[in-house]
Structure formats: C-alpha cells, structure tokens
Amino acid sequence: MHISITGKICFVLLLIFSSVLLGTTTLQSWRERSLLLELSQIQMGYQLDHYLSGLDPALLTGNPALRALLQRRLPTPPQVEALRVLRAQTLPGDALPQERATDSQDKAALAGEARSRLVRRDGKSLLILTRPILAGPSLCGNICPLPEGQVLGALRLEYSLDPQLDKMEQHVLTQALMLSLLFGAGLLLAIYILRRQIVTPLVRIRQTLDRAADLGIWQEVHIRQDDEIGRLGESVDHLMRRLAADQDHQNKAP
Image 1 (spheres, rainbow, N blue to C red):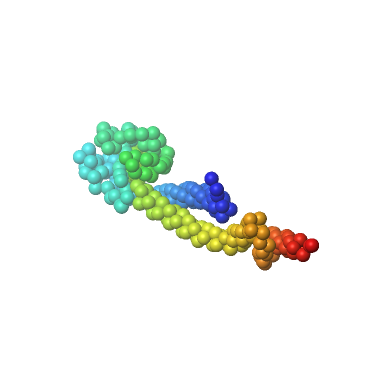
Image 2 (tube, rainbow, N blue to C red):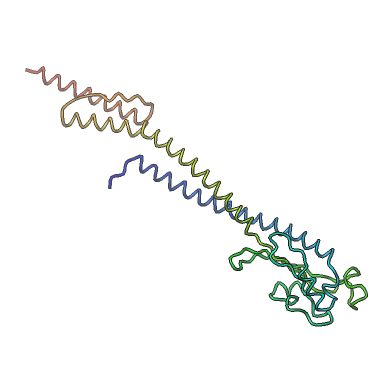
C-alpha cells in the first residue's frame, strides 16, 4: 500500500498527539477528582461539626418514638443522601434499626474514630463521613451517668458527589475538545507547509526526471529553497544542464 510522505508524517503526529492527549486528560481528571474529594471532605466535615454543635440530646436520650421522629426531621441539604444518628450500646434502652452500626466505619465511629471514605453504590458516588458524639454537659448533662468524653453515639452523613463529578468530567472533556481543535488546526497548517515545502518540489523533481528519462527533455526544476530540497533541486538542475550540453555536443558532432 502506497502512503505519501505527508500521510506518514501526519500519522506520526496524530499518534504523538493522541498519546499526549490521553495522558494529559487522565492526569488532569485524577488531579481534579482528588481536589474535589478533598474539598468535599472539608466542606462536609464543617457541616458535621455544625450538626454536632447543635445536636438535640433527645436524639440519644429520648424515648424510641421521639428519637425516630427526630431522626426523620434531621436537616438534609442538597446532595445529602442520608443523615442519621447512631446510638452507642452504653446508653440505656435498645437502639432503633436506623441507630445501629451497619459497617466497619460505623463501628469505628462508635469507638471514637472519625472517618471518611468514597464508595460507589447503586450507580452513585457517595462520600461517607462519620463523627463520634462524645458525652458532655451540652448533650448528656445529668441524664446519663457517663464521664465526659465517653462515646454516646456517632453522626453519619452520606453526600453525593455525582453533580460535581459530572461538572468535572464536562470540564475535562471540554478542554480535551479544545486541544483537539487546536491540534486539528496545527495539523492542517503542517499539511499545507509539508505540501508547499516538500511534497510539491519533490513532485516537480520526479516529473522532471520522468520527462528526461522518457522523452529526453532536459528541463530544469528551478527550486529556490535554502534547505535539503533546494540543494536537491540544484543538483537536478546541474544534471539537466550537463545532459543538455552532452546532447548538444552529440548533435553537433559529424
């Protein structure tokens, strides 16, 4: 299969650009995703601290019916999929189903450890944060005989990152599209320069040599370029003059 010089050079340029674009897009997506996760953790951490500072003690010390009612009335800002209070086993009475630990992160929170993690569930990207609730005058007071600092429960928040991730992906794709358009314009410019500076002069040289070989026409190409193609054209012109001179000499010979 015949492939022109322009096609070969354009293929190499396309291969290089595709590799660079893929690597750049992947790296940018990873960086923006990491930054988004970090900022979301900070933002939701502040939100959890705000909930903890204004937590109603009845969520932990009230009767089951009152606790269930207060659980349903917990504020859920946009993108917060779930917000619930977990109850430690050290408190009197049985915990409601929604107050029990469901995974290792809940158990760690009830042990006094704050955690955060990113999970994929039901096609959604969720940032799950947990904070322990510690006994103190503002929460327990004289209602329960637990020392200050004792874990009473935990606060669990599930935050959807899908809207931010969608915007991030659109931003990355937009930048990739812009780079592709710039590369396309550069590729067209490169094709124009290649055809003007390399392909067209080589075609003229080939045509000149073909006429010399087939028809005996010693015509110069007159390529004026200060590069290898120009020097090749000068060599061909010199050859044509020598052949023309030899032909004239043979024609004049008796």
